[in-house]
Image (cartoon, rainbow over the protein chains, first blue to last red):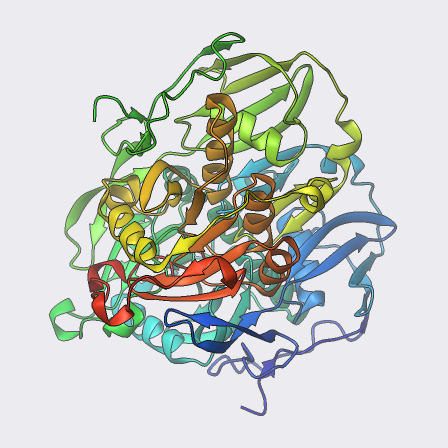
Length: 315
Length: 315
């Protein structure tokens, strides 16, 4: 596990540190949750159904205020493990940062909970910040002004495919990885995969933080969307579809269900949308042509019931 | 079921229609989900794990733009079944409407997806709308300026209690009710209860819409928080705790887990916070003194495994 990045925390990042090459090694997990990081959970005392005192772990949320140059953008509640990836991914997914923008520096002040992203080109986002849409995450998701601006221009990599053998293998691998979910619960996970290999596994109190952290990681590390598959524990809502499409990833998988607008948007974009993926079962409601049935479902085992608790209701 | 309000939709509401008395009948379900309402789900076609064509139901999301008098406040994605309760509940929970505000009218234009709440006293919320905090729902929750303004002043009704026999009975009743969750999935539920009786069961794509609809219902129908218990399928995050406290309800229960800030806030307010409530099992991390152990857990059955899929992961 020594080469994995787990629960890392940076305080400074400068241009030149950018895009450290990954040496092309996409055969192993690059980022995984770190359930043993004492900064990410808190032990709390209470009582159980018998009135007995118990102690349990709960996930920490801390406010992180994001500045883009001199502009305060938003305050996010996050577990706070990767403020740099979160900041950059949020800005990318909101179209406040373009693919050709040059990031000069990222500074994080742990004590103040402030992360500042500085770019070569400056823009004023006052106008964008005024236009808010409360979306359908389980909370009040906010979609700023032109989140959809980029959506219609995205072209997916050619030749992308999803083998049904990968699907079962991916859920199995992801379920078996140590995670904050397993140790404390009440958290979302998003995983960037290639074939049946999980590459980047991020967790956060909000699944939109988890997907933003992956977007930021891909940008800062120079990971391309070609050959990638995106896996989420949460529902396939409009926001998840919009963000996956904007990241250029052609395939989105979830254990959980669909919303109608999520399905509509996936079809508009030609995204492969696979939901209710549990063990050998799944439903695809968009982009079915990328699915290759390389294994008979009968040859696969049903999912271990221990995992059935995950991700059916809402997100 | 004739007396229940199910999937109702109003286009106009005028002062004088306000607070129709409930004739004190709190022994039955007043509002329930209506999975048969064709406006709330859509049939979509896709393929399954065998490549066979299937048709399935997915929940509809539609944008609803809320105006308070002449001020545009927010656009929310909702299933759209109760735009009036959603609008009023949102404004109450954001402290944009005070308990002593007089609502003159609520108009809903179904075609435009616009709901306008008009009050006797007008205020300008420009300033409040500028201050945004992205919270930890699964999406980017938005907490406006002074969401916490009211929090510290709330006093709960005296003598509130939670019997352990109610807990098991409530989950059982709620799980057995027909719902959009059972018919289409990917949705959250919130239930206002009294003793072991579910009273108002709202579902929505975002659980914050579900809680807001209940807050709006309570305000417009004149339901008091005394003796009430709030049940949610979602996680016990800071937002859920803040809203429950603001609604004056002393007890909050979830099948799902806790976040650290949710626990902190519940302790500050003296809210009874019960999570991971499944069948006879639960954990209480705040306000344990309201719990009355009136039944031995051994006397209760374990939860039917069919329900174990619900609500463990994230929200």
